[in-house]
Length: 368
View 1 (tube, rainbow, N blue to C red):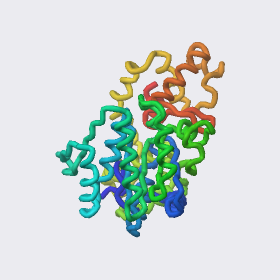
View 2: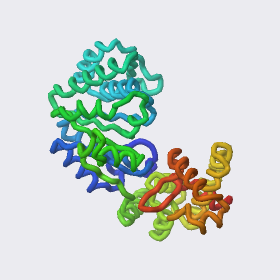
View 3: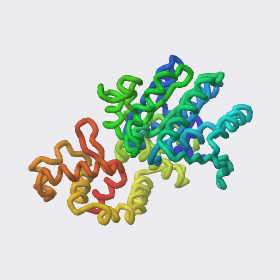
View 4: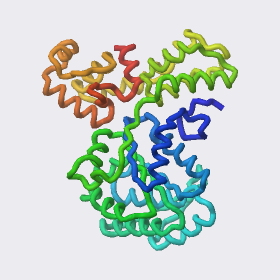
């Protein structure tokens, strides 16, 4: 099995470190504290949550539920995600109890043709019905015989729902729960930070915040080297470090690159093989990245391209940068920056603007 996982969590041996973060989250859970995992996309938040769940399952002291609400657009879809998380991967005894409980909502139950797992759809027509149903679910979980942990991924999504006061509604019920704790996570870093740090927001200081950074370089390098060695493959340390540099220490892009390198089947990996694979990764995305000319305005595309070519930019609205790439006025650049951030094509971290997609940045640098 390829040890460089790029999809779902498998087991601890394929999960690189995050030991301190895992221990911190488990400590929060054990001591009845809610916690927020905050980072840019594809830095390993979901894998970290699954790693925490793996360790909690060993003790069998909790009921664990995970929901990803990134693709939800209203409170009814949130409700359905929550309900479906209750029935997924549960033992027969608790599964039958939960099914009996959700019958009150008159659900439509079907089975996923791919996974074979049951899926539930509840159609509530009004805000009051949706809120009442969510409240019922939380009250049900509060009465379970073991503590409950609910991980809600991309939690900031609730701020885009058309229903008003969703934050206030959820906070008003969550704060009274004693048997249920939450792991919130999200990738809109400034928005999520604001939700839990802004005095005027309902979730103000209701959870501790864990800002997930890039993996420690030495730890990651050791993990990669060890997995090649265990597979009977050889790669020099300096080449590993060079690859991590090339992928900007960004977890998903590092993992994907080494997944490709390991999967190529060579026993001795050299610089030429790595360069070929890097070129293959970039060229395979040519049609995807070329299409951004049609998806963005000319000004937005030029700003995106300029930041990619520079790799990282501190002052994209400076006169020097604007002149170098013929970007127009500073107000135009500011407007483009906002749009590109909203579209999650670029992000602003530690005073620096970068592209989210490391490979797209490389593509611009190669085909400018």
